[in-house]
Length: 567
Ligand code: CAO
Image (cartoon, rainbow, N blue to C red; front, top):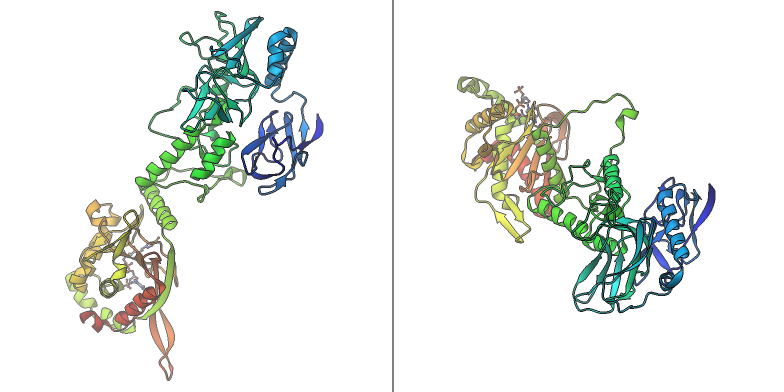
């Protein structure tokens, strides 16, 4: 094992390039030619490959750094063919075979590829111990000539199946993949990105197992194709060992089905520059895209599938993942102490989804205020006997419901929903208010309808009944729908203020904390007054700050003198 500098190779004519992605970390083990950096010039983005197999010991570059040919970007302990030795020795074998064969074909391979004029897709070389060499040529390109290569989908040493994409070319009208005519191993790539290809040009050289060799797997021609054993076995092994890539165990592959499993973020990705460019343009986080190409390479259609899946989720109202919302990586908690895991209840999952959706979609602001409820409480307590006769407990909540209905009527900009899809504000002509109820199985928000048209006793009765139903899991779906605004009262529990999350598509929610006696200056002296803390969170897209202050001031006035509820 020897330490070597990792240097920037020939940059294909570019003087200086910018690092746009660092694909490895210190300590990572890489194979020779594995991409370690993606750099971008003003013309193209390319991956810089590891010069050898080994372990990255130091990285001295970061995203945004500018590099020139020969710059040192880090160091590595190279293993001299240890890691990835199979591939390397086979590639070396291929080289040896080429040298042993000498002759025409090698000379041709060493030269810059030129159109051969051969019409067939491949040119067969000499057989070598059960395998033969093939020079794959560019097939007919739908009538196009001089079509630039925009992506090389394989690396030397890769094992590919028949029809696996080898390179991607792009004409004025379309992007096309040139498929492999054989299953086998890529021994030499004869083109590079940016090269212009026409039908018959040499593309790459492959080692193909001779037909008819029992169990050889690779090399079967179209129509008699077997899955290359080595590739299938390796893929299965990788899937079984790498659940973090989102792969299913062998035999449970689900490609083309309705579901699209997201690999966890933070995983190293294999993708060509064109795919990375597409991902950047579409805002796709490649660490979350499930690869379907050879050797877990991400293809363009994988990125498109990921975007489609997220769009679908967005349309269905699900949580969307994207670069702006990085996932949360969990550590292995058991390393810190004993833990146990428990499945979330459906209600907990629904609440978590709704809270996250609202928090991520709504620009929240919370306005704090206080209401002097000394007189209101005196009146309320005076109704205790009447309440007992009616079998209803009159808490502060019905007064607050009524005060909110008054504020919603006077400031109708709080009684709306935003339809951003149609760029419309939906104004509601009814006043239904949701009340958050704490239950042993989670938070539920039953809705009291037409609060503006109901008296305090009726509101107290309905609130009590709905809270009871929520705690007994007896609420019907219709009893939890249609709210214009919500109230969440922690007053019976404690606290001085909090920032509630708006219950979208409503645009505001009032939080109540515990009322407390406070000294309040009346202009001449401090008076002991019972002050109720108000916390109004609102959607700042729908409501401006001045209106929010007006709303809480109005609530404060009405609750300070409940005769105003009669006006
Ligand atoms: N300040 C001081 N005391 C208050 C108060 C306040 N703001 N609000 C209520 N109280 C008192 C009540 O008067 C009652 O006292 P008495 O028994 O002496 O009369 C006591 O607190 C308990 O009231 P309550 O909670 O039974 O009734 P309520 O009408 O105030 O609230 C309900 C009903 C359903 C809103 C409430 O039971 C509840 O579930 N609150 C929690 C809501 C919640 O979890 N919100 C958080 C959502 S975000 O995670």
